[in-house]
Length: 338
Image (tube, rainbow, N blue to C red):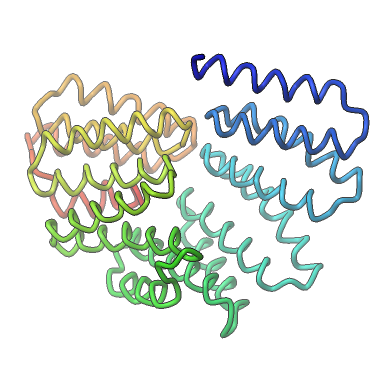
């Protein structure tokens, strides 16, 4: 039996159960199950519809904890899709709820999530403020949460090319996180950030080695979007190292993987793909990839990113630059893949 047929039959089973259900708690649980199933199949927008229905029904039931969990999922799906304003609105609703429950740890995590949405949508000053508020709430405890927040700050400083500050925050993050089963996903992510710092400090071979390690470790977690992010950073590292054919393969893989899972970073992948084509002097292919990146950034209202793509096409395209320069890495790709 084909995967598509299995998928259709499973979905039909859930929908049939949902149609027959009469108790509100059963309906909410089935809506959540349907949302999760659609999400796993890459149908994020369709999943959101069921998540919102489940949330409303949990609210009607007075099931505050369940409603809050679903609302968190909704916010993260919006962020995954690049719908940052919608994500921020939902996260702020969650923040209001956490503040009234006197739960500093939950409040810190939500503040960190808000900071991430701000950072990704290039509201960097706001992002820093939310991260620092989150860090203050953890006090001397909540080791793992502090580690995650410090990693977020490291990525923020990396975006701003504040290398010393990024290194310090990353070191603090790695001291708080470990590679054991509880923390390993968070710890593995720090390796990707560290590889980018290596690249900015002109240590390309070290960056490539760390990316290979990150890819192998994160691969064990089965996170396709994060594997795509590793491939995106591999493409940049290989462009710096003048390994243009391998860079193109990584960029193509990242574009495919982000596209299949519906992640907003597919726009970033098209930008890197355009630069890879320029490195091989394939101008028409580069322009097509750049056009794809611009169209997607326009839909996301990331106008500064559009300027960066256009600068790439102008600088590298008109001067026939092959190897990715440190200046490009800092400015035109400074906030990409982080």
